[in-house]
Image (cartoon, rainbow over all chains, first blue to last red):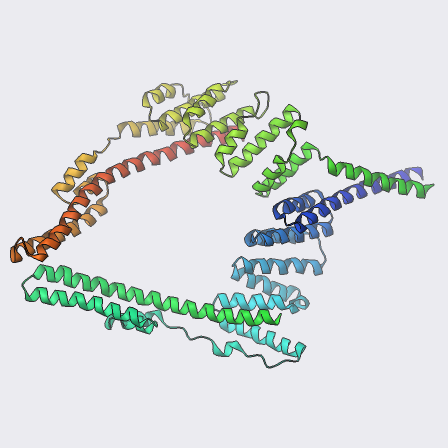
Length: 281
Length: 289
């Protein structure tokens, strides 16, 4: 009996000692986080992860360090850090929170493919959890960033329907009904090849098109007048040479302008969707 | 009675844990820093070690701390700070040889070769491998300083028998051969070649494509200038414009050839510098890790 009591006392001593030690570290880390000392706080959370084996305390430490990394805008580091927490023996409700955090940080880090894959994982493994609005929003936005508007519109429609049901409001405009029409870079190149300046005009830059016509025209004019005056070499090298250079440059430029035009349209549309979705959260 | 004992145990354990939290043992902190290092959290590891109160440490602990800090900075490629910490490790420490050797390498990399040589010479060679490593490092520095007679003298002490050094010793010997037979190209000659035929100076310097690229515009402008002179005479606007452009391109081509030779020479030596530094580094890793 006495031996059993002694054993119990030793066990209590060790458990309480380690737990309170970790809890002290945790409290210190939380205090540093609240003071805005994110680097020191993240070291303190790492100390908790290093010294403590309790999964729940470790979960809290991961959440704490994640906050520090987010505050420091170290989203890529946050993704790999929170992914390391997957090995913890945690209940599903906490595991899916970590997965959700990983998806959010992945979106903030600009890893859109990874965000979509994590969202799909959450949707399949923890279907009840996928009801969270923010996760749907980042999935839609990630698909938008990858120009996968068709897929994004499916999530978007589901999101709007759910919102309409929850808030009894079905008057929201469906932005995906007006997906911007993008211009073709190939068309611009062909236009510029056969009609100087036409590619730039197609890309929405008529002034640049006019300048291009003038420059190419000047080359041709110089070539013809030089030829007529008997300056044959000058006509070929300077006249034809400058025309050829401006013509090639014009073709390339029209392609760049169409690319810029499309990029602007894509960003504008994505911003509009982002603005609407965030206002609904 | 049992209840009293139970509460006593809880109180005692919580009090002792508080005391533990306040004074963390140095060895535990070192292990924690190692844990952070393994997670590649170098800044965090440095922070933990720099928080240590060095006045409360024994000499051995202090050496361990300095070595670990030096090593962390080395991994972060902050070689200046790394060398400063590594050089503070005392000769009694088990880390001394490694610390000194890596500090010397760091200084060599930073082109502080005089300091590096001093550090290497101060190392007391306890065994033949370390003795040979010293000669090897000094020979590498001699190559970097283009002091070929000194390299030849140091090369004679290479035994080519230590597994960690054999390959790199052979490499250094090969670099010495390559560098000593290398004929320096003359910038003046390159300029003269380009004056005779535009672009030829660059071809002489080893830049064939640049040479052809330089020839075409100068030749075209030359032909245009000639045509303008033939048709319009010396006072024609065409001749003045094309003639001026030709002169600028012609002179620029000569100057470009002169500069090219210097750039190519620098590239050649820079390439060998990198090779030597890499070969100086490999044996350190093999011997001390």
